[in-house]
Length: 225
Image (tube, rainbow, N blue to C red; front, side, top):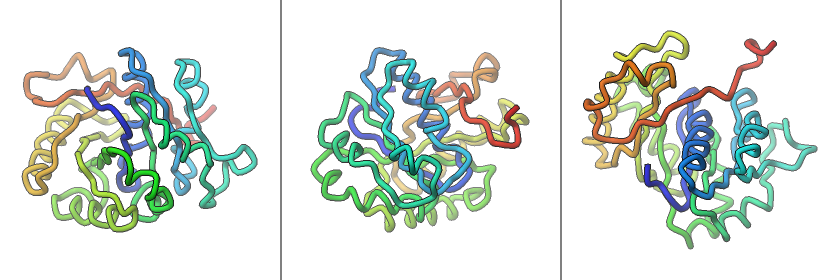
């Protein structure tokens, strides 16, 4: 993947955008890219970049989080360091935005900073989740996110999965579905994702875009020991 500059990862609730953001950061760092990532998800209490902080920092990735005293609060608190990160971005600066239109509202507060930079905002789509099982639903989510964030989505990502039940056919179906969304919206497919254990089973020549290998770093509370 050749994504560089400021990349905002957004999507509807349950799309897997945070897992995508974390793995994009890790994969880019392993390929020699200087990476920073900011957790702007102030809505979802279970899957947040901050849960993977140690893993990312051990890789040498700078992670910007809310102040410690607000670490697990569901409040619209934006770390001043985020503005600084945007003003002086690294080779790849990833902003993990909240889900749905409510979650990306915080981006509007950064409008002045972001308007002066080249920004890529990618919509992560899982066609096996509610509200994005058809093209119309994906476009509706897209428009809601754009209206709330005041930023236009520039690219698409397929994160087709049924968690532990995912098989190669789900990846293929998600990719074909995203091609329909791409054709309707005119947006480029930046990449698709696939869990690491599925990669050896995939026919890679079926894809004309990069495939991001997903190694799960985020675990919901009900699966924690």
